[in-house]
Every structure is written in structure tokens, then in C-alpha cells.
Image (cartoon, rainbow, N blue to C red; front, side, top):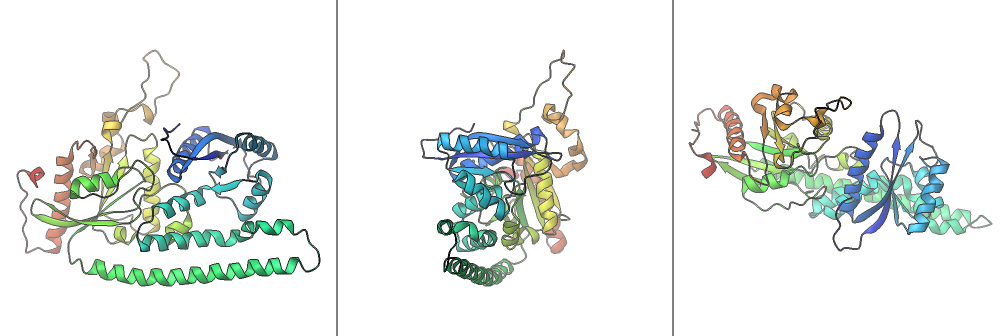
Amino acid sequence: MLEKKSIDYERAVLIGLMNREQNEEKVNEYLDELEFLTYTAGGEVFKRFVQRMDVPNPKTLIGSGKMEEVEAYVKKHEIGSVIFDDELSPAQQRNIEKQLRCKIIDRTSLILDIFAQRAQTSYARTQVELAQYEYLLPRLTGLWTHLERQKGGIGMRGPGETEIETDRRIVRDRITLLKKKLLKIDRQMETQRGNRGSLVRVALIGYTNVGKSTLMNVVSKSEVFAENKLFATLDTTVRKVVLGNLPFLLSDTVGFIRKLPTQLVESFKSTLDEVREADLLLHIVDISHPQFEEHIESVNKILSEIKSSDKKTIMVFNKIDQFEHESIDDDDLITEKTGRHFTLDEWKHTWMERLGNRALFISALNKENLDDFRKRVYDEVRDIHVTRFPYNNFLYPEHLDEY
């Protein structure tokens, strides 16, 4: 359980599904992440419920027996929110709300809520608002709780339907307006990117909470907001960095996450232009996380979606100071050795060995191996710069860490 400060957190329970694609270990891992999301949003998890179902219930996602168990717990402990790890259909959300009579949230709406909290600039707020409205549109009927008192009767049904349709039109008009606003801002940002000249562009990418902003602060000597919460950075930050005698632009982008809502991927595609237009990607990985390989796959999947998977990339394995492996006793003949039992040196001799000099192992927080990091980035940026400006010749300084 995460350590909570003296803040009034909203009481919540989590619900996950176990099936052929998600075994018990995978479900627990997803629920760990969902708990961290809940904590980031301002909630405190009191209990987890896991249902083993090969086919989800089309009406309530989980079975009737598990639903009664959840209902009893919600009433007894005065739970304010029930959070599902899987996205709920509008019908499922309405049915569950009727039975549990509390706030029903799925993973998508939880992430949208966090993004709404984190958005600082007008651009980010517009992107989040657009994603929220697109998520909300098919679920509008669930918001009209005052209609539950209308059991039918002459003159009752029509006005309710008209009110809902009016609200739908308002939302659709708002979506159209926000899309036009984003297009206008996109053109402005495209002009800004064009005005940066021909400097080499380097983008920090990676799963959320892997230390991108911390590394950005160390390398660029700036003060980008960094916190041990998911999506601490939402707005793209660009800084001019000089290593040795070579300047380049370094951008810190929004973190990725598994099951990233489609609405957010669409809304934030313009923000991810920083990734698409980058000359070099620094893929930051939290190697201390037990599932860091899956995080890499999730990031690569999104890179593929935004057509950036073929860019020159350096894998930067961060948080080596926090890396711990599970040990196996010599007398233990039952436990099979898996990745979580590998030491850091053993990991370096797995598939990572094939990366060659495109793999770096650092601790941004403790500033471990940052000299190697600077030298590697410098060499890559220099190669790109020399290709772009063959008449320039940069010499690598003897003491790069002094710059």
C-alpha cells in the first residue's frame, strides 16, 4: 500500500478481470498501476476485487455474485468511487451506477481526470478537454439522474429526450470548436518549431514516472517540474542544451502508459510532434520496475502509432540505484529463474547486449554514469550535426562534464 500524507483522500475500491490473456500476476500488476493512478488522482484504495471470467458480463462487466460482494463492501465502508481497470461501455456504466449508487470510474476516465489536473497551459487544457468531451458524448444519458424519477406518463418522456439531445448537440458543437482551436494552436506551434532553426532536436520519451523530467533538469540545468506521481509532466518542455561546444534542443514529452485512452492519443498527437520531428530519441526506462520490458513494448507501440518507430534511438536505463533483484537460494530447486531474478550485470548480457553502445545505464537522481551519458549523446548529436553541416567540424573536449 502506498504511503499517504495527511490529506483527505477519496475512498475507492479497484476491480480487475482475470482471463486467458491476463493471469493473476498480470492482473495484480495492472491493479498496482491502477492504485498508483488512483493515488495520483487523489484517492485511497481500501480494497481490490478480482473476478475470474473468460467472457465479461455485457451488462455489468463482472458477475452478479461479485457485484453483490462489491455492493456490500461499498455500503459498509462508505466507498466514494469504484474504479474498473478495463474500459466500461456506456450501458455497463449506467447499470453499475444503478446498483452500487456511487461514482463509477474506469481506467480511461481516471487517466483523463489526472490529465485534467496536470494540464497547465491553454494548449494542454484544450487537448484534455477535447478528449474528455469525446469520452463523455456516448455516456451523456448516464448523467441525467433526475430522469430516474420520471417513471413514464403523459408529457414526461418527450421533454427528457429533448433535453438529452440538446445537451448532445452542445457537446458536439464544443468538440468542433475545440478541434478548430487546436488546429490554430498547431499552426502556431509549427511556426515556433520552424523558427528554432536547424539545431539538432533530441526528445526524451518513455513510460510515465521513469525519470524523464529529473534527467531533463540535470542535463539542461533547468527546473522542470518532477514528482513521484504518474503524469507529473503533461506539457512539452523544450530547452537549449550545450554539451562541449555543441548546442542542441532537448524536449521533455508526456509519459506513455499501458491502455492509454484512444481519445488522449488522438488529442495529444500534436504534442507528440516533438517526437515525430526529433532527430534523436532518448528512450528512458525505469530498470528498477519489475515490468520494465512491458513498459518498453508499450512505448514502442505508441511510437509505431505516431510513425516514429524507425528513428535513431538510445535506450537509457535509469534508476540503477533503485534496482533490486529477487534472490534464489542454492537449495531451492522449485523456483524457476526468471527475469526478476537477474542481476543488473546479467540483464546487460541478455537482449540488451545486442544494443551495443545504444544502451546506457544511469541514475539521474544520484547522477551516476552521467559522463558516459553526455559523451554518448554528444557523439550522436555531433554525427547528425556534421551530416547536416559538413563544413562544420566539432572536436570532442577532454572534460565534457565541465560544460
